[in-house]
Image (tube, rainbow, N blue to C red; front, side, top):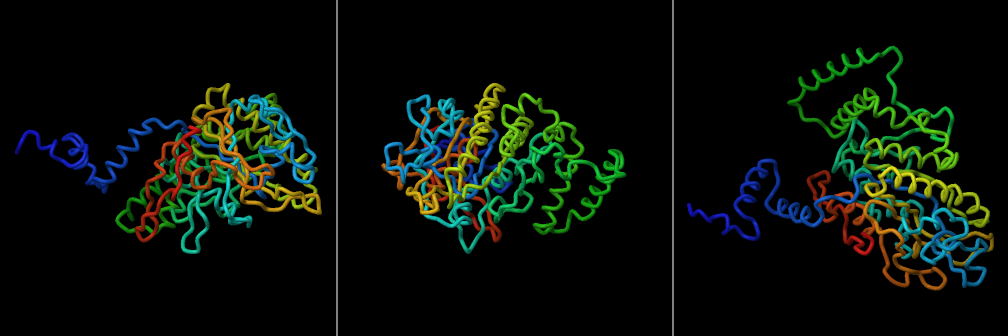
Length: 433
């Protein structure tokens, strides 16, 4: 055999790479997949983020009354809330003074757009990066991250605060083993306690270990039997549950009582404020993906009073989260993504509210390698449609995955061994990263 046989391999693969392919082919990785992974690693060898906090505002937050006000539009379009100047000389709604004061740490996409005006379909778009399909159910961002990376430090990889009630927060065509762990309670409550985090009555740590050993022996006995997805998922849940309740560090991550009162006050003793504080505790402890749910934004009536109730606690809590992560040295490694279903109509209706409007709305990003102080894209004079740089859910999904180190052009396997794109037709928003 010629000594320079490696140089004759097609493409940029040398002898060392060829040997690597020979080794990993035994694990089911093809040459094409290997080259694809190597190229992805060369492009982004160290992900910018290792955790994500996704904030979802259910109902459809008005962009005109938050991050894309139109102060020169007629009153029936701009509303009555007024504006506040940001650090860059732009303007946000007057209800967002805290975020305006740290606008150098956040990026706002003003040209978000899709075509789904129904709540369920708009939610699906923004939590999966896909339009709904009657043929297949797509996984949420959190489930994809859970699938790709798994748990860290005995903590669930994917946690929902306060719960994972929305079906689009689930695993889709992936195994149910990658589903979210629901906190199951309100962190703002004085009696807050995470469900299923403590040992059952009468079961001490020694007895639990005995049960774990017994379960392991049963698993070993039936190891040769093919497991269904539901049984495999159940086994995964059992293993993760044992890790969670047997780890003092993991349990402490959910312990809101350990947080100083001064920090709780900084976030605001509101539901959204304390949910965001718990999210910070979770990513600090090692959770990879936290979804924080909030709602009430479907303001078809009296939008002014509705926003005056909803936005100040969000402004305070999100501002505190960004500052808190920053001073702890965590902001650079934690990607914050705040999304909603869609925007609201540009003209205030006869009930002093705004209706559904998916053609244009705003999304906020921070940390995790995102360029702060950026306003990406714009809408027309009344906020009805993107004026430039339109961004669809696919591009937002690709950017999220890219920042945490998942190649958005990769494929996942659905039942029946059908490969499905993690993101379809979505390009990373390079100007923001």
